[in-house]
Image (spheres, rainbow over the protein chains, first blue to last red):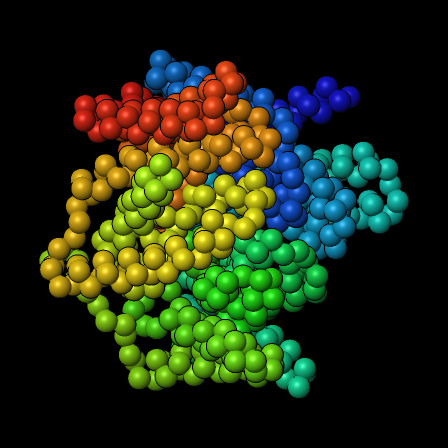
Length: 207
Length: 207
Length: 207
C-alpha cells in the first residue's frame, strides 16, 4: 500500500516537474532555467504552503534525494529532446497531472488541518499546495497563470476535493479514508472536466 | 470608536479586493483567478509583512471569516458584472483605496515597531503592508506593478505617513494618536495627489 | 582582512543594487520603483534564503544602515542620470557583479551548512542567495529572469563554486579557506565565461 502511494506521488511530482520542463523549453530557457522552473513546478506549491504554515523542514530538505532526482529528470529530458527532436505533448501530461492534483490537494489539506488551521484555511492550503507550483512556474515564465485564466476547472476541482477531506474528518472517518476520498474526488472531477471539455461559465465585464 | 475603525478597515479591505477583481476582469481571468487575485490584493501585503517579521497566525487565519467574506464579494461582483454589463470604475475606487493605504500603513508600521524592528525597517514594513498587495496583484496579472511605474505618489505617501507614526512614538505620544496621525497624513497626501494630479519628477536615463 | 572583506561585500551589494537601478530606469519606473527594484536586486536573494531557512533577523534588519545606504545610492544614481544624461553601462557592472556572485554564493552556502542543511540543499541555497535577487528584479520588471534565459553561465558558476565549499568542509579545511576558494572559483568561472563568450549548449525542443 505504501509502495503504491509512493509510486503515485513520484508519478505526480514527475508530472508537475515535466510541465515545468515543457514550459521552460517552449520559452527557450537555458539549462539552468529548465531545472529551476521544473523545481518550482514540482516543489513550489508545497514549499509556499510550508512557508505560510511556518513548517520546517521542507519536503525537499528532509528528502534531499528528490532534488537529485529532479536534476536527473531535467538532464534526461534535455538529452532526449535534443536527440529525438521531440517534446512530450501537454496532452500526454494531463493524466498524471490530474493524479498529482488529487494527491497534492489531499496531502496539503491534511497538513494544514494537522497544524490546527480552520476549515476554510485548510482548504485554501490544499489548493495552494496543488496549484501554486504551476502558478509560480507561469509567473517566472512571464505568463498569466493558466490556473487563473484557463476557464477549464482545475483549482475548482482541488477546492471541491479539499472539502471532502474536511467533511470526512468532521464526520470522524479514518484518516486514510478521508485522504483517499479527497484525492479521488479531485482527480475524478479533473478527469471528467478533461473528457467533457466543460468550461467554467464566462462573463463579460463592461460590455 | 472600535466600530468605526472596523468599518473603515472593512471598507479598505473591500477597496483593495475590488481593485483585484477589476484587474482580473480586465485580464479576462476565470472565476478562480478573480478570487485569487482579489485575495492577493486584499491580504497579500499584510501576509508578506508577517512572513518577513515571522509572525503567525496571519490575519486571515485568525479571522477566517474574512476569507468567506472575500469569496462572497467575488461571487457578488461577478454576478453583478454579468447582470449589468457594468464594472465599477477605477475612479470610484480611488477614495476607499486612499483610506486603505492610510490604515494599512499605520497598522503595518505599528506591528513592525512592536516586534522591535529599527525605524527604517518599520517604515519599510508599513509601506510593504499597504503597497505589496497591489504589487503582487500586478505581478500575477503580468504587469509591471503600477505602484512602481505610475509617477503619481502612492508608496511615497505611505512612506511619509509611516515616519509620522515613528516620530509620534519617539515623542511619547499615545498609540492611538500616532496611528490616527499616520493614517490621516497618508490618506490626505494621497487624496491631495489625486486632486492636484501631481506627479513625481521624471528623469530620462541615457538620453 | 575584515576591512577588505567588508569593502568587497559593499562593492558586490552596490553592483547588485545598480543592476536593479539600471533595469528600473530602462523600464521607465518612477523613483519608488527604482528604490524597490534596487532593494530586491541587492537583498532579495539573501532574504529569500533566510525565509526558506527560517533565519531571523534578516541582514537588512540587523544592519539597517544598509537600507539608508541603498536609498542614498538610488537618490545619487537618479540625480546623476538626470544631470549627465548618462547611465552606467551593463558592461561596466559585469566585474563587480562577478565578484558579488562569488561572495554571495560562498556566504549563502555557508549559512545553509551552518543550519544543518544537506549538501545539495546548501548548494541550492548558495545559488538562491547569489542569483534570486536578480530573478526577483526581473520578475517585478515583467521579464523572464535573465539568469534562466541567458545561455551564458551564471547560476552554473555559483553551482560549481558552492560545491567547492561543501568539498572543502568535507575535507576538514578551515572555514575561511573554503569560503575564499568557493568565492574565487565562482568569480573566476564567471569572469572566464565573460571573457571567452562561452555559452551553454543549446537544444531545440520539438523541431
